[in-house]
Length: 413
Image (tube, rainbow, N blue to C red; front, side, top):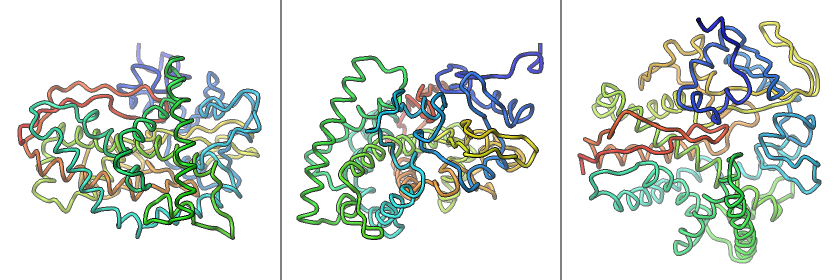
């Protein structure tokens, strides 16, 4: 029996909750792209798009919405974001799930904090943190890069640039890890309690620290966010807390994935690793190729207030969730020849791992900077590191593709 004789994958078989998809997603995504590039997934009540051209059409279309509060009651968007079924009035999504005009207002304020000038100013401090973490395991023979480095660095960086005092970094980062449990639909009741407790502590802590920054400004991200204005409007305390939670979840998972999966790609493709060692100036292009191959954020959602027709003639009904597979689009052979080949000299590295259109990721430059600093440091300090084995396991978190573990031998220590 070949693939054409079996039903197309649907529902949770197209999410990280499915073990086979979690390990090897591309066979299913490639099949959909070939047989049904605009696939209606009735199990999750959504369209599932896999071609780059359709992604561009949807993400750049005017009038598209992301806010679950404007989606249909049974929509996949509401399921994914965990919006209360009763449509509670106090539900406030993060900036990623805000529509205009509020999205434009929030983005204009936050963009001031994540300007290229500010990001570049953080480089020296991020480099210091990177080597501090490495110093903690540099004398070991075997390590788990995910647990001992890739997960730690982005939390430490967020704490540093927000202006959290160093003595409080450990507790602050633990709150971030606990709050990230909100992304796991299979969390236990105990984990939910742990998550809620951390959220309460973070809310109180950020509220108090924001008040301090209004009185005594400092050169940190929290001060920038507290004082930034757009048309006379500033972030409210609630918006500031939601933004902090967002930075501690999506912002850290993306960077952790880039670091760990980037090292895995290099150590699994020794000719590319040697090419990078011989030509360190290829690092920026290598980072983009890693992001294309990995797609740390695997999908994004929209819903449309009116019917629309795609380039291939496929029709999308108003109100239905449109799930766009960034992972599939980044491996579309019509855009990237030999898409499954990792090539740090690839000419076209215009991936969509940070999305596209008006919701393009504001933290993209920071993620690239952290990834570059981390990878350069690891390659310089452990030039002969190697994989302990060829097996890898991925997290079951929906929407993110992140390694759970990456055992390495630090032969260059």
